[in-house]
Length: 357
Ligand code: NAD
Ligand code: DAU
Image (tube, rainbow, N blue to C red; front, side, top):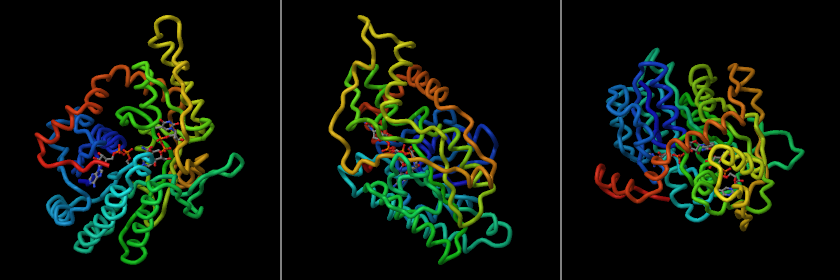
């Protein structure tokens, strides 16, 4: 079996669902259920004995040690993190606790467990750390895309915390020999993304007739990667990635934020036209820019493509259409993750206070 952390979040849940669709190997899912983790994301596998859910913190060393001893996973995939840049600017502490300290604790537990393995089990064990392209900093329009050999130049508290975690993962390999692999991917999109991130926020606001807040001039560029393509890339790295290496994963889809917002508006104009002849783009409102806002991210995926034969399968336009349809068909999901009722449900079912950013 494998141990996944953060499996109730956006990318982690996509990974768990796809994993259990594709094979019978069980998953232990350790998730703290912060505001971003939603057990409903895993509704399709509720009651499936191959999915063992444990509510807990990656920084809880005794808990993680006990889970590893009990389940003896062949791999750990670390998705758990505080992931939203704006929250990291407003309240950085949780990012340091989970992304830095939590990851180090997880590494300590993994190392102790791995040391106790022998032969084949020790050989094939992997610690896969899921990270971000934001660690490389920002690009100008003419710069070549990020490569694995680029220097780290994180600019936000979020990216600094992820960069720190990447360095610790690297150190646990070089110093202690832990068999790690790290992935740095670009902006994911797809179903079940919490509506604080650009794409789901714009869909959500548009459908409610609220302003669509574009930071600054909206000419910042992101590379968009469908979450299912990302999960396929993670599988390739887990199965065939070289120990101690890092792999960039991108969507080959650079777009300005204005292009993305207009694409959402046009799709909604077709699918759910507004009354009175107005268009969704009328809701676009330029607001104050994000402090320290990175201008452009772009990924050179030559390494993962060449070594592991991975490439994104979904074109951005098709992926966006599918994503918008998913949000239209799952308005109750949006209501449940944004309403206080869901937090109340977590408190009742799991007790204690969930740590929120
Ligand atoms: P998310 O915010 O949707 O989910 C994070 C999950 O981690 C939640 O389920 C949350 O409850 C859980 N979690 C948070 N703190 C925890 C802790 N201390 N212990 C256990 N669980 C905890 O994040 P996401 O978008 O799914 O991102 C997953 C990973 O991928 C993160 O490491 C993020 O940095 C990275 N990443 C995300 C993107 C993106 O576009 N979303 C891009 C690049 C990299
Ligand atoms: O690049 C990978 C990163 O992508 C991940 O590591 C992060 O976890 C993930 O949150 C994402 O970070 P971004 O800051 O790029 O994503 P976000 O959706 O917050 O913003 C995307 C762009 O849209 C960014 O340039 C800021 C802008 N934006 C965002 C919001 C929420 C707006 O203009 N208006 C908004 O309301």
